[in-house]
Amino acid sequence: LLLGAAFLCSHGFSPPRVMSPPAYKQHVPSAAKLVSSSAKQTRNTSRLYSSAAVSVTDLQAVSLPERKLLNKLQSAVVRTLIVAFIMSMCVALPVTLFPVWVLYRLKIINRVQKEMISLRVGQFCSRWLMRLFPFARKKVIVEPETLTDPQPAIWVCNHISMLDLFFVLALDKKMRGKNRRPIKCLYWKGLESNPITCLLCKMAGFIPVDMSDNGNGNANEYDPKSFKQMLRATKNAIKDGFDIAILPEGQPNPTPENGLQPVFSGAFTLAKMSRRPIQMIALHGLHKMWHPDENIGMACTARDMAARVYPGSRVYKDAEEFSSTFSAVVGHFGAHGTDLDDTELQLWLDGTMWETELSRRAATRMTAEDVVDDKESKPSKVEEGARSTSP
Image (tube, rainbow, N blue to C red; front, side, top):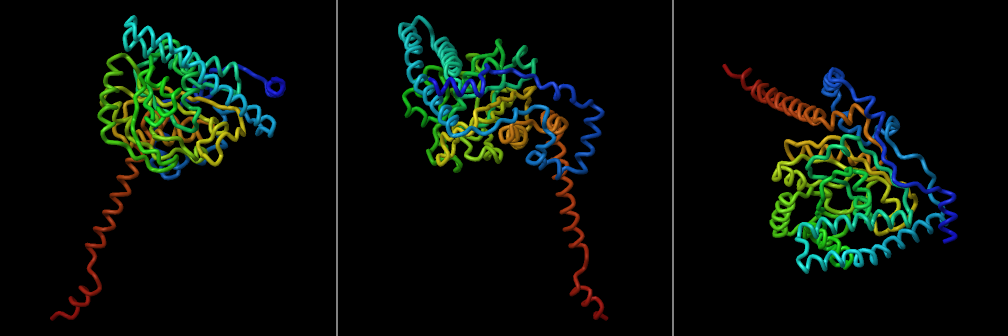
């Protein structure tokens, strides 16, 4: 307790902050500027399409404050607080969910009520135990309209740590507002081997996806049979009034500082099936507390994290457009804790950047075809020699 008090005195403690990115709002380009910028993008698409990994120095509009890395003592205290939080969750969840289970078994509440109440219980436990054991500084960056007028959506988020689920539960009210719809998460069925996560996922009606446990960073191997069950459960959840949350990477990312892993099209498929738009959330900093790489683990090199809720849900035309947009926008924030340049971010969010990329591909393809046609139209040296020797 003395070490914890000393740590908090030296680093300070504040509740999660909700920030509206004013610089982003003030510098959103006009329609004329966007058209002009789009034309410029067409001429320089290759440079702009790859700038998501390099344009870091100009991105000070929405960023985490610069913090020094934790020393050994501070790291040990943070690690102790994380362990205390996890152990407390192991006690709190069974105790608080037991009355809900009893009410459901006695048929006082129905299945949907049981799942909604269990979700709120999980969020309550995560939120208050993080306040009791403040191992992280939390920041939520979200536009006001997202909080005041939430719309049904498929929510997608990057996966950077074993702590992701707890923070998504704890910060859900800050990220999606008081009037948010209840949500169901898709999760790896292997988590049911842990009795506590199994209890929470089952009681809240989360939707399992069965795949092989082949280690983080390796290709996912899904069970095709589980997809039918997942789609059926997702349809039922949408009918019951739930939003759906999915992690398109499919597993924790062992190298979040380098961007995202391959993005799967499951979120696009669910959005197309349910006729709902997709809305993006990006997490940063949790891998510095509990890294998904088993060789690093709970190294606890820092305690600052941020959650970024991007404005405007969107209907994507195809899976590749969604994957490219998600990788560029969320991948950059997950790696650096900052947004893309305002103009480039707006071009990605409204689809202009993807249209530019398609135009570039078409132009490249036409150029390649012209080169092939030129080669076929020019006579070879053998043919020219035959013509010159013919009578």
